[in-house]
Length: 135
Image (cartoon, rainbow, N blue to C red; front, top):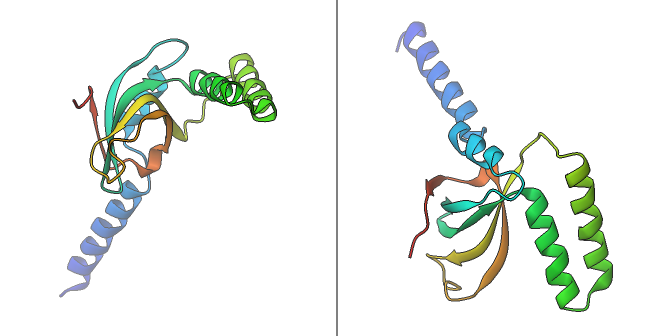
């Protein structure tokens, strides 16, 4: 192989490697649009597991976590998530690192029948997504 061909191959590999290390910009924009009480159905694949649920804002996810802890009698954890929710509501972070879902159904995993109330997935770990829910 000539140096020009190798250089081109190295560029292709470098570009692809860079692409893999960034979240999908379309997914990033969809997650960014879920603010306040705005929710919509979404299905994502991460590491071979498919999750289907309702996309919610990080603030809504934090408030729901607090409620779950309150219901289980874990007041310290509930207070912690309420404080996080208040901080988020007062000053939403523009940096999106995760997507947040409620009413999650795991489609392709041995625990598929297990009810999942809330779920958080690092946005850079999502392999594929679809706006809409799987049955």
